[in-house]
Length: 297
Image (spheres, rainbow, N blue to C red):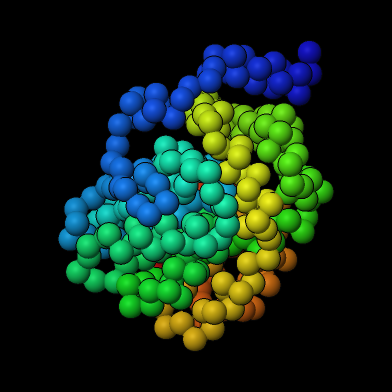
């Protein structure tokens, strides 16, 4: 039997084992801290003391706060406090019936930021789509952000694939996302996690993705163009006085180096770290190098 066949068979077993948990069932199992924000309940995870230098972590478009699980211990070892949360429609945050446009996620991030009490400006790190949100946060709250870290900064996801445009079609986007998009996304996560020895993340991702509201949120993001051209958010940083660090992987097929170079061309003076052979999941595969770059700044 081929490796591909084995992978698909294992994936089907995981799907059968996970079942269809509700969001409340997942919350009861996970516990955690929840904030009541304007658009819904937001799941927040904080590690460290309130007086420690703070790093606000913003995840990408599909995987919630636990994509930082391997990075946080390295930041904590350096004495940093970390604050991360699940975007609406993701993880254990609410999945309201709203338009999942850029403004929704930016408002949520700003509300979380405004609730963080620090004695000094903090660091905001965003991965992929989260990098575009992080750039907008730095623009909106310049006095609060001392350092901005853009990891695999998303430029225009819609430009590279046929399927996002299909999922954006009115009336059929959500059903197609549920029947085609989500299973494909789950299989891709299964392969990626297995390749780095993180198989335990597959059932976690599937459970959260199959809870009601996730596919509708993703379909809405495509319909509203939320993952399309992000240039304006990076361009607004041209006069920014915060320290900026860009981190990218040479083997990233989601945000290729040509897009990273375009983002960099819009930024003021900044530091750059290129990780040889790193893919889009570099926060899981190279957390110590990402943390070291933050510490060295």
